[in-house]
Amino acid sequence: MSAPTIRTRHTAAAADAVERARDAATRESWTEAYELLHAHDRHPSRGLTADDLSVLADAAWWSGHLDESVTARLRAHAAFLAADDHRGAGLASWWLHYEYAGLGRPAAAAGWLHRARHHLADLPDCPEQCFLAWTDAEEAEAHGDHAAALAAVHRMTGLALASGSPDLLALSRQAESRVLLAAGRRAEGLARLDDAMCAVTAGELSGMFTGWLYCLALTQCMEAADFARAVEWTNAAMEWCAPPWTGHPPPDGPDSPDGSADARDPGNPASLPMTVPSGENPFRGVCRAHRVEVLDLLGAWALAEAEARQACREVPVDCLESAAAAYYAAGDVQRRQGRLDAAAVSYGHAHELGRIPQPGLALLRLAQGRADAAVAGVELALACRGAPDHDVLGRARLLAARTEVALAVRDVAGAAGAAAELDALAGDGAGAVPLLRALADTAVGSVALARKGSDALLPLRRALAGWLELRVPYEAAQVRMLLAAADRAAGDEEGARLELGAARAAFERLGAVPDARRAAALLTGGSRRRLPGGLTAREAEVLRLVAEGGTNKDIARALVISEHTVARHLNNIFAKLGVGSRASATAYAYAHGLV
Image 1 (tube, helix red, strand yellow):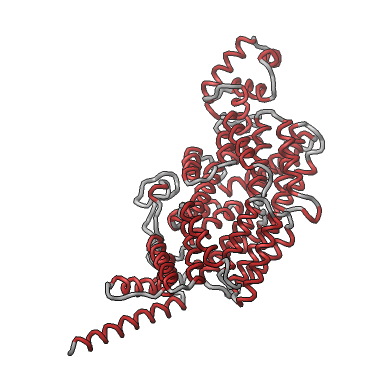
Image 2: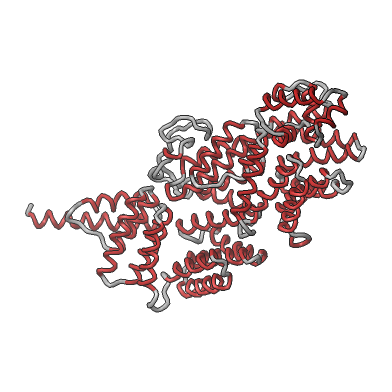
């Protein structure tokens, strides 16, 4: 056979491989497309067109080869530029901006965004300009310029409609939703989001935009405290992430994200996978991290922790904030189960990955009797967050924790201020947000109870109804504990016992061991209770009086002992509990149900 004939056959085979790769990409069989194009591209005598290099970049990203994706995108940009194709070069530049931003290279991201603007700005209207308008809206929103942000998304919507692209139109609806929510136009914003998600759940979009919109929408729902939508779309997202997205399963890891050793140990952020195993859906870990938050609220704690562990294995390197969210949620579960050391490790890993682990860490310090650290942590987090922004749930949780911590150190005025802000944030009547309203009613009722007023029952009963309607069991059980105290203060002993019994049963089902013990102790009147910290009965009695604000003289008079004896008891209490102040001892008493 002659050499030209052999070359012709090889050329035909190479062309066939590229055609099969293009077909695989059309079917979104990304691993197949990647393997075909990668093999073709390795041959020195073969070349890929700019469009084929873009397909290789997409296929490499879906297959978890992030560095190769960037390299192929850089080559695609050069090829588009050589062909004087500014639309193609502009789109490649924008994607390089997006990928570099995800990889934590802001300078490179900014440079490629500038190039994208250079390529696309002076062209007639085209679909590629949608991405610039989307970025313009994000930048305007970050500066609080809602009018400019809304103008940018309206331009994006016009471009998307002209293009006839369902992907771009759905993305523009999501962008408009984000801007409207940030501007406080909640009903309109959620309506736009529902519009975008209809296209997602109906399967009308490409895989990239489907995953993208699930991630964006789930973040928006949690930030807006729309728990019902978060539950619905989290379940839908996980169904979409399931097979036919198949590939090699990740290796076995540790049983919990608490620092156990493993080659890809989610207890060690430095060992997190840099790529997603070939064939995996790279959105799976991100969607799973959102699911962890939902499962946590629903009280499915064992499953939430297992999902957090899996999410940390699955998230790609450009989405490590999702791993941080999973660690934080695992820390919350561990803290409420009484696994305080494990919770501290999880919060630490969340912090290493860039998340401020508040208010969970402050509540952990409160449970450890470290009141000063609890107060400082939650107040600093509130100061850093500043005025309420689009993440209303994040601020609401901080305010709820600020109320709890302040009450633990007998700062009733500080607790009242936090509860009042939370009450205003939650809204009222038809404009109330159910999750925020339940948080606010809990805080307001707690403050009223601390003031020994008779007006605690009404907000606490509203809070209980709200948590039960939302099907959030832990917070509902916590409110029952407060209601029991309010009932007893009002002389309704039977009502108090009913609330305590229901709370104890809920805590036991959840595995909230410290809370279950506290409820059981209150039910039995504490007569057979094993006191925490190795305290004696007399020391516990002294600690209760300290927590109620008594001076050494007050305590000596109440217990008919000398002030010297009170001081000796306090020294013993401080030593046993590992605290150094009356405020910290009070916080310990509060956290362990001694008050």
